[in-house]
Each structure stands twice: as structure tokens, then as C-alpha cells.
Length: 56
Image 1 (cartoon, rainbow, N blue to C red):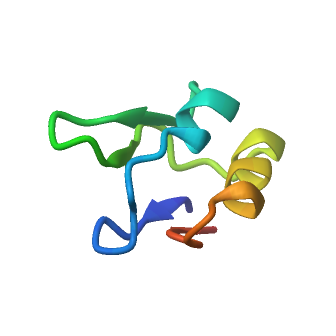
Image 2 (spheres, rainbow, N blue to C red; image 1 turned 60 degrees about the horizontal axis):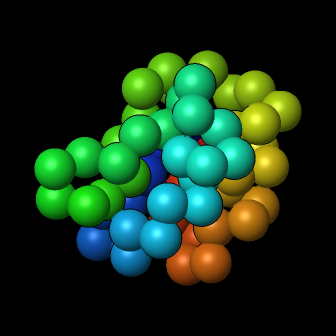
């Protein structure tokens, strides 16, 4: 299961850029999960999140 901690998220958009089938930016400019399946691109997004807001 993929989760984003909105308190940590700085809205950089890295996750949505790397894995748009899993993440999108919401109206508050924070990342939100579209599909909570743990995929290779979701793992890549989590590894590249600058504030470690994504957990798998």
C-alpha cells in the first residue's frame, strides 16, 4: 500500500512526474495517491522523494 504524509509533503511534484499512474497533485499542491498498489515506479518515486513523505 502506498501512502503520502501530507504533513511532510512539500508539493515538489517529483512523485507525480515519475509515476503519474500512482500520484497526482491535489488542489492544495500536495501529492495524493491515485492507486495504492506498490509498483516499480511507486518505489522509484518513494526513493526520490526529497522529504521522504511516501511510504510503501
